[in-house]
Length: 564
Image 1 (cartoon, rainbow, N blue to C red):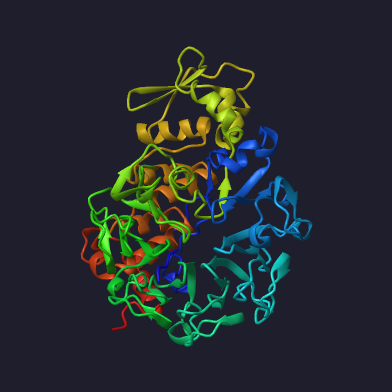
Image 2: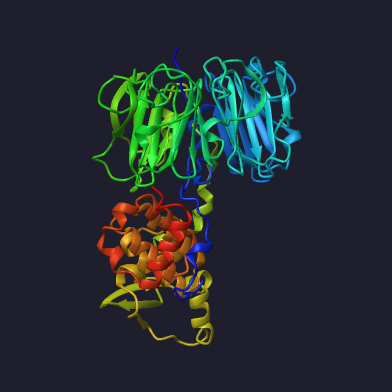
């Protein structure tokens, strides 16, 4: 059988009051992507006005002939072939014109997944779970095998539970709750429900065994296999394993969750499953692959299956995102600099090594090269017109011909426009308040920040973008804190997170504390704990402030970092 997919604060806060969880899960639908949905043929008939209303979308189905999308006012629309009533319109009619699912109107969708029947699972911001479509194996979780012609609330065994993420295999289903519990139901011929038997499961059942005391943070499904990441970065798998897609070192099916011991010592941040293969991304940006390799989907340079995880793309730069889905044999990855690679089955060709593309996101790979050309995740869409003003202003940044003000830093000039700075930044609004109707001196000298940092800040005011290496982003974080630029502060933290290494982790942690960047501090702390041995051997660790060191040791001990 084959299977698939503020201002600075003193360094006196008590680390011990923070949470003890140490994994930072990747959320596949959290980031808004600038992507043209008309790359998927179903959307090519929609006009600009309709396309501009879409905030989230997903193309699915055996031949990528069905689609669902959510508008900016949280209305849910569907269109396409409607195989197995998967559109949820209440009938079996296909439609090329989008139809609104009134039952879901106003509900904020946070997670969506689809099976091979297809059947659909949808979770809302309120934690409710809805299902419809193919139900031959009770994958809708309503206790029957009757086709689901319209969305129904899945409530059996989930009362008072808040569902945050859903995943579908071919004919089985999984849900993750906000308390880290995993529930599974549906087709169970290979143990993919994790119940300890191969009997189909008609309603949601909590996956226990060795997950009983664990807090799961992410779930994915292959065709008839299941994977979960828990809060310390461990990975567990169960179900069909004929191609080694569970990564256990053998090809025997597993009826209950088993830990992937080959990934011991690594903190996994994201997992994805293809038709019969799996990929894992660690918090250090390392990529591992295992399972079926008939089409080169593991990216190892050959077509041999791998029963245990093997590292790939080790010679490339840091990986920040991976992509696969149970409908295809295609894999993709995005690097820290924005390069997108693809491999596996790509338009009928078998690419056995990662191939560099000109795409800007992994979603483009599936639109243009996957078979079928489905979406690997619920896509959150950023529209072109969102940055129109910034794009127009960008060409005027540092333009001496139109500027009415210049900054001098380290002997170098940066040309800007007082009106733009006043509109975009409270710091400059206050500065110019008393001089707006007077001639402000032509040159402002800046000596507390470096030229690259200050230029990046001013350019941010024109473009909403920051392009700095992680090392310089620390200086920009200092500036953002001083100027109370909270959005810039968050962007700096994002850049720093993607550039964290064992060598700089404690320096970044110290900076996060110094600049009162709590989210970044939590991230750096978790990284330091996950790589405690290596971090404590770096120069940065032994050069930190004594109080910070004591607080770190105290907090790390509270979350069990020093247990043998």
